[in-house]
Length: 262
Image 1: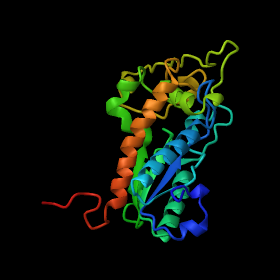
Image 2: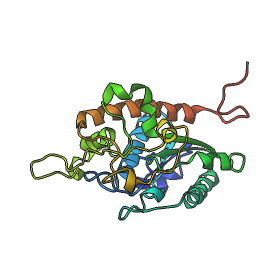
Image 3: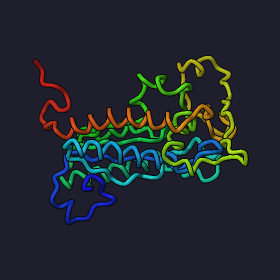
């Protein structure tokens, strides 16, 4: 299992030349009433394992790093034990890990983000030209945009149908239930903005979740099923493992990651 660093010994690692490293980014925060605080960590870890194993089996020289369990929670700070890491702190931490990879000869790095609050694009801009590593940001849940409604009925924001389906499929024992067996989740009705510009997205803010939501849920969870979670995972693995294989096989030249000009 040389693709999973958490479970691999040095006697194996020293004999492998890795091309791609995958670093999952999670968070520790409430997910409505029914999902565990570690939902984003569990999602990032399992998605990472599934896509890296599939890519490895197709010949990719890939290594999955342990998941970072903390993320940016500044807008959930009113909820107990939402464990915040400020963006600047998170960027510094990831930068150090990237440089560790460069020292190990790995120059293709995928940041596999599992938490919407981890806005990592500014870090990619900041590090461009400052490191030998080529950084690729993958918010894994966004790779389903074009087929999302082939699987789910309701749009996802936080702890909704998609995330609940994921947990029902792979960690059903962690989904809180009432005495009658139903999920212990509220309907996640969100507060409306008073300004049209915010509603339409012409203007944006950092949303204060203790006002936006009742119990931190921001999407309807009750249409979730384990079957939907499994269907979603199949699509994610198919698409992202293919990318990892292609990335592993691609040489780094002065045009990378673009095609040569005609």
